[in-house]
Image 1 (spheres, rainbow, N blue to C red):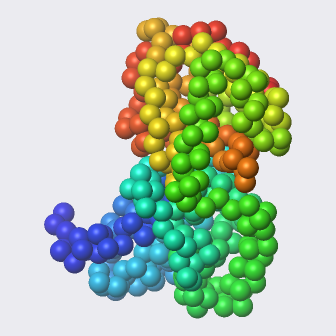
Image 2 (image 1 turned 120 degrees about the horizontal axis):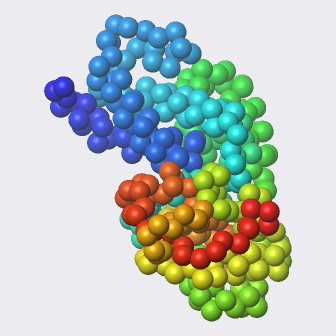
Image 3 (image 1 turned 30 degrees about the vertical axis):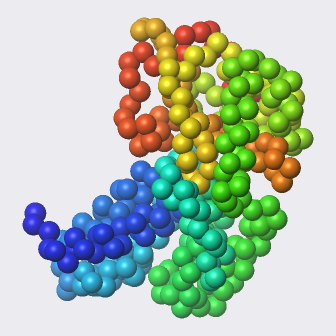
Length: 339
């Protein structure tokens, strides 16, 4: 298919915006990729005279030079549908966002905009995305459009086919639900990035040395760890809470593991560790061959939360493909699922 130059220009102008909306709606980089492609295919092939009765999402395809409002409606409604589908399905264990590389954005953390409550980097952080899980899909859309993307009440009402009064009420309720996050926001400043990098290095050193006491010293009292394997790999299926329990859990989980590759990358605004494990061919255990470890610090610089992403689907984009044969851990696995 020959692509009209105006749509090629529109893609360069709007694709990043559409991707950013869908990722924050769903916490999935792959879903965001799919929606961006689908939205622009619709824009290229749709008959401009056609209309859609599906909540006016595709009311009348605009000219390529005026695509952003139309694309935003598609992105938001696709995000709402994807969220509802995920919440209807039985997810095994804790859900965590799919990590994505923010190295370029994180090199110069943006200042909060005058009219935005949260900037793009903060709104992509694990802390923010996990907090959003408390919101219903439509309330999530309203909060993101108003407080991250700086849409006016009227623009949100038009995008979501809601009255302006309904938008205001929904927005007020969404902010009230986000009050716990607001009390202790995670803003990825350069200072926080450097502190996180340092504590992450300390944690990895203690894990390598199997130093449980050392691990405990860097943990906050109410620390918790969440592991997302989507039921695919051996992992804790409930959060592990408390300094002693978390330190013991991590010491056991890391015992005997040998990483063939380890890389510290800026993911979702903060440093994280990417690990690939080595094992002999023929290994048939349930340990994840790859993982990403992120953390959140409290005001004192202690670890208040550790996130581990093990689910293969959530790591494909980041690692660049499926794990090679022979990746994994050559050891007997402890039973961590009941921790």
